[in-house]
Length: 177
Length: 372
Image 1: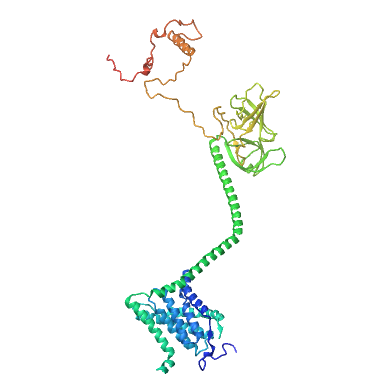
Image 2 (image 1 turned 60 degrees about the vertical axis):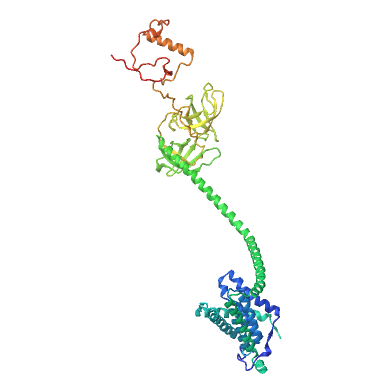
């Protein structure tokens, strides 16, 4: 059966299909994602709309199928992003911690190898990321942040479109347990 | 309790991590302090990689750029050579157009200056034949050109119309061996016949060996051939050799010295005077007119140029004054008494008082007029 022939919603947790990565590969991929976000927009501002650290967090959380591992991955990537940002450390950390946790939790119930589901999850988590970030910025820091919903959904679609080939490339690096 | 943690382990860890980060955030916001250590680690981890990537990118971009430039250098070189060739041709064309404009302007100026009625024409072809010197002009019978008319340029004579066609004419150049025209030398006014030789120089024939013709002397048309009006430059003498009866005088035609592209056909010729030897025709160089005679600023001083340069001149002037004082006319009657002093002779009425000798050096001062 092909990938669309399998049921999208599994009946029980699919812990047996977790994927292992070499720690170095994971580290380099996370660093590369953050590096992409701080370096590539130097050449074109349009690349700033891509949230590669978020997509990498989602991917690793989905493939790990372990909420604790997912939240720590999200926490690490978020704190790394915070370190290179101007705002206080913790904003991206908290948002990506939640996203890592939720993504890993979702992967235990859904067949996350399905590209459509991956795109939907990427779209959803990007929207959640932006909305929660806006909430934290407004509530905790007391800053007047603007949440442009049409732009947010547009960028969510863009990141979802980028997530598909990115996840496919990252799939090539994994080794099955 | 232990069961609770084992059952809600994931949520517990999540809350702990979130709480820790929340505390960290609150600590930073409340105390306005910075977690420098984490930032240092992050920047230290990121910036070296960024530096390496940027170095590799710039180097590889430069290499690729150089490679692409080398790839296109050959084509670009060829294109530039073609462009240079086109520009050279264009430059040459514009130069020739400029020269033609200058020639046409000179031709128009000469046409307006000369008293003869002329018609501007352009050389459009040359005649065939080894020795024959023929040319075709773009004016013919429809323009009023007739057989036998003179063809000239501002620099000198060129030839005469040999045959006329409706829209063109055939011109026999003065370098043709069958061409002949009457000429006259500028200094000695010696008449001769200008003949072509089939090459660049002409000869002036029928000038006896006794006549003096110098190298560099100009020959002008004499008008005796009834073709060329008198006074047009024919050429300058390049060499003079004595012959058996007549001298062999080689003349360089002046009409061809600036090329032969535009000419004038003399429709109605008017004879002119041959200029003086001091005037160099068509020298191509502007020469100032002679300076005016020096005039003394003082009105009391005679402005006459002293002509008594030698003792003989002064003696002749003295004898002439003595003769005039005694009413003597030269060539008739007895000679005057040259021993008498002309100053002692009775004064003759004069229109203006002559200055006293030696008064030229005195300062000017108003003389009182004697009362009657």
